[in-house]
Length: 280
Image (cartoon, rainbow, N blue to C red; front, side, top):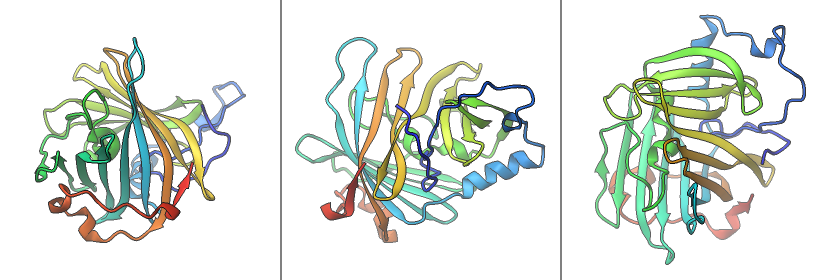
């Protein structure tokens, strides 16, 4: 499912082109050389500081794919991405077949804090204090706000582990510890060596056992900009998978700060006009 070109315009939300490597990895391949003690925190800091060139809105569908049985009907949604106060912020709305908002969340993060609010079925938004996986975006799904706003990338306790081959590319692997007692206890995530974008994330329990995994699956182009077109989230116990696919992207937007006010979350947001969206 991998595309053959790459553009880095959406680092925080997992933008990367994973090309196929033909050469075998050897001990002398400097693409897999370990980072030095000085380089490791600098690479992570650069990733955390990466940002979009402008605000963006994505039309997405989320399909639950059980290990056994037929795929569920796709759940449509809208995902807005912006930047403020030294970190990314996102707003998401899941909609039913009639276009009504059934679940919405708003998340902000930077190196000092992560904030999350959730609103369901038109009720006022509630602040979520747990930094764990949380509840799914719709009944029958695995995907939660945790998988879209990725709080673990900014957890304060982060350790560089290695530089390895991940999804066919050289990548730096970090382990972050949950500052709270929620699940997951820790997350192991990989940053592409050449482009600094996140390739995958494995959520683990306190014993280091994988409980959940996220991976970039496919890429597409909106206008002249490459974006991730699909990511998967897999429950390691059931082996069920959710596939989030981006169908259209509205780029170069200017979203007012009031749009990311939690008090507005229980009201449907006005998406960009149809002519602003470009198909992937």
